[in-house]
Amino acid sequence: MAHVASSTPDWDYAARLTEARARIHTAEWSAGRAGSGVRLLVATKAWDADAAVAAVSAGASLVGESRMQELAVKGAPLKAAGAKVHVIGQLQRNKAATAVEFADCVQTVDSLALAERLSRLCEDAERSLDVMIQVNVSGEDSKAGVAPHEALALASATQRLPLLTVTGFMTIGLNSPDEAAVRAGYAQLAAVRDEALIRAERGDMPLRDAWELSMGMSNDLEWAIAEGATIVRVGTAIMGHRSR
Ligand SMILES: *Cc1c(COP(=O)(O)O)cnc(C)c1O
Image 1 (tube, rainbow, N blue to C red):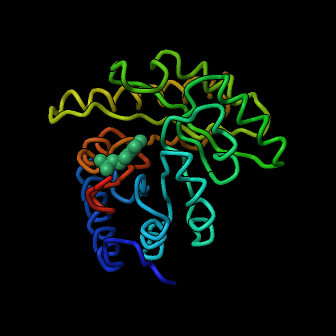
Image 2 (cartoon, rainbow, N blue to C red; image 1 turned 45 degrees about the horizontal axis):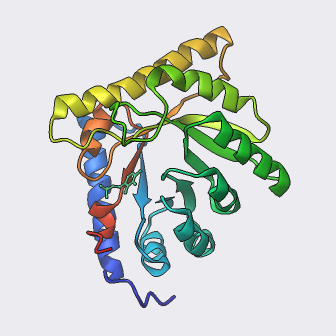
Image 3 (tube, protein in one colour; image 1 turned 90 degrees about the vertical axis):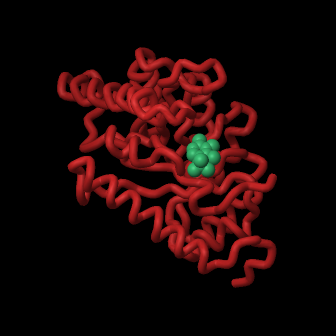
C-alpha cells in the first residue's frame, strides 16, 4: 500500500501508538484500574486518507472522524483497512447520511431530532448503529452536548428508537491546565453513567454490562482515565500537529 501524501513516516505512527498505549497502561495502573482495557481512539481530523490509513496500518483499530466532508472521503479507505470508525464531531442533521454510510458509532448525539434522523436513515440502509450521548460537562456555550441532568432522558428516548443502541456517554473536557477543574467535569460524566446503572437496575433504562465513557484527549487522558474513561480520543499525540 502506498502512503504518498502522508507527511509522517509510517514507523512514527507505530512508535506514537506504542507511547500512547504506555500512557494509558500507566494511567490505568495509577487509577487502580489495571487491565480495565481502556480503548484508544485515534482522532484523524484534518489528516488525509493516506495518513489516516497509515495510522490504521500501524495498529490503530479505532478511528474518530469529526467532519462529514472528510468522512465521505476517508470512510471507504478506513473501512477497507479494517478500522472501526466513530463520529466525534458535531453532526448536523443534513450530514447524518454520511455518518450512517460509514460510521460504526456516532458519539455525538445531542438531540432527539438528530437521533430520530439517524434512526430513519438506518431503517433505509437496513443497518443498526451504536450511538453515544454527548454531554456538556463544562457548561461552556461553545461546547456541544446536553446538560448532565438532561443526558439520561435523551439516552432513554434515543434507546426507544428503532435500530439505535445507546452504548454510553461522551464529553469534550474543559480545555485548561487546572487538573481539579478538568477532572470535576469528567467526574460529572461518570456520575451520569452511575445514575444510568441505578436506573437500569430499576428497569428504567436498558441494562448494559458497562456503559462507555468517551473522554480525555492528548493533553489530559490520564485525568480522564482517573475518572473512569473507557475510550480516550487522541489526535496530536499520534498524528502530529495539524498544519491545516
Ligand atoms: C480533535 C479531537 C480530539 C483529539 O484532540 P487532541 O488534542 O489532538 O488529542 C478528541 N476529541 C475530539 C472531539 C476532537 O475533535
